[in-house]
Image (cartoon, rainbow, N blue to C red; front, side, top):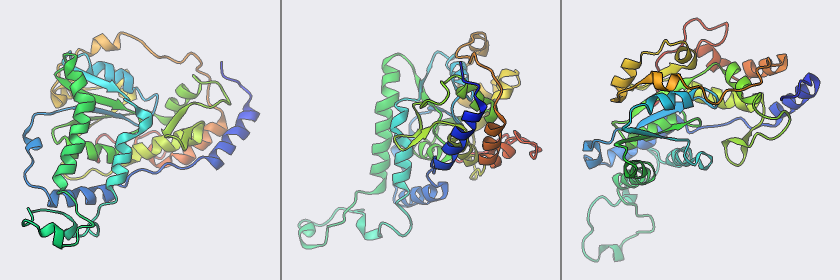
Length: 326
């Protein structure tokens, strides 16, 4: 059971807020510019004509109801949604970070080897910087994800595959859509105050959580880091690019029976039997003690924009229903 020592927790939480690093994420604008450079270099890709249609369930942090929604989606027996596979590695966030190094200004156009050189030409020219055409990098990254996630699913009898993650925002979604244009994206968001209470009351007070926004230098350990992680992910979905299509679901609608499952299954191309998942309760927190006033103050201070945008703060009027960076 969680300690109720409010004074000790007050000092611990404010020290954590002062020392915790604010998470950064790949700039969606920078990533879009990088992917546009690769698109300029690309011939029509065979991959775009394939029928890969993975489902990516992206949550705005822990205790958001993502596992419940994952189980609902998996009531279609053709689908295997991996759960946060090797999440601590942050493979896709780090790839998105790396791709942001490409821009209209770099690399220079003559670095790309776009045509076959004449015999012997490479021995008589400057080749210190010589890059394969962009489509080959995209194909390689796509093949890595297929080998990692799709092949093990198919070998176990599942025709469809995907993943659930609590660390991915719109930039990672944009990268996944670049790799898999036919992918389906479902984003789930929950009131930060409730999500934080659910997680923090399930962990020993004053001890390391063993969880990371990004390992190893961005641990979660209090209201500030949890709120900043939630706010980073939530606000990343507020600027949809033209033509983006995802589904954003609020946890509160999920548990209140206000989700249109027929729309969700049509969008994902699945056949859902949501009652099979909803009738089973798993992973509840026994300690439901209220948040301390200082915890509420920190959360509202560090996640103001996301709380207001999604209707979780008094200043908000209309909850955000659709947005995307994917």
